Image (cartoon, rainbow, N blue to C red; front, side, top):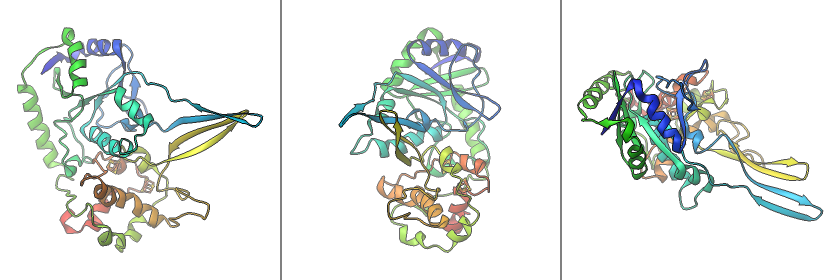
Amino acid sequence: MRKCSLNSIDKVFEVISQSAKLYLPVDSENGASYKLWESGAIMSNALNTVRSPKDFFFPQTENLMEFKTSGKLIEVIDNREEKEDFVIFGVRACDVKSFEVLDRVFLNDITDTFYGNRRQHGVIISMACTRPVETCFCQTFDIDATNPEGDITCWKTENSIYFRANTDKGESLLAKLDSVTEEADDTQVKMQQEKTAEIMNRLPLADLKADAFGGGKTKQFFNHPAWAELSEACLGCGTCTFVCPTCQCYDIKDFKTNDGVIRFRCWDSCMYSEFTKMAHGNNRITQLERFRQRFMHKLVYYPENNDGLFSCVGCGRCLSKCPISMNIVKVMKKIGGNANE
Ligand code: SF4
Ligand code: SF4
């Protein structure tokens, strides 16, 4: 384990940025967001960035290919390009776990090369939580906020930042920081982990369990009468899906230019009335069906196809951002029964 004093963290950032683009969360009037590091940037103490770091691997829009026309000829242009190395600093445990959820979608039997290339070039430096808040419930999904995964894990104590490499990528980056860090034992880290765990255990959602959900529960929950009441006020705004680190639905569209077409993809939302609309019309014609799809996917369909892994990481973003205060916790409590109260 290595450490540096908090006062000298800028030196660490400087060394990292000599070999890769470095992004870290900084505060703005709209909340914390990841920004390219520049000298003097102050790392945010916020627990969550407003938008999750999934943007680094699965951006909101991206061009996939182009077609140029000339008379009767059509030229197909592959505009994929090798990405540059980059480092994301300060990713919380829940958000690190969300990358596993996305990997199982984009790096499955068929690899999404756009996503895969970014994953190869990205190094994740996580940050253990010290002040979890009332919307946090990562422990419902067995995520340890005091010991996040990632290529390197960091712990911030009163005066220092501690670093532990977890992967080859992490080892290689940490080796570059030898001149600006020093060897350290984990005494302070363990003390901080204990304090954070105590806070976690006192949070209002500390006892929320996901045991009632998982693969094979479609019949049990699909026609549950509570969907009508839960979905009644939903505006279909899609905010919950856009802030969610694990939502990964997208649309592919063609944009006509003067001499051809640009094919691009952009995030979509199962909460939208035109989501997956086909020539015959829409397959989910009511907001109840769309609302149910979002939560059944996270709590039943996804774990059914992914060895029991849920596609919620308990980050709490949908709890704080939904304009009608609807969220996955309310759904779990209502349809999951008393075990989840
Ligand atoms: S943020 Fe709330 S209102 Fe908007 S789509 Fe999601 S559940 Fe519905
Ligand atoms: S469903 Fe809500 S709490 Fe779960 S990962 Fe998505 S935004 Fe976070």
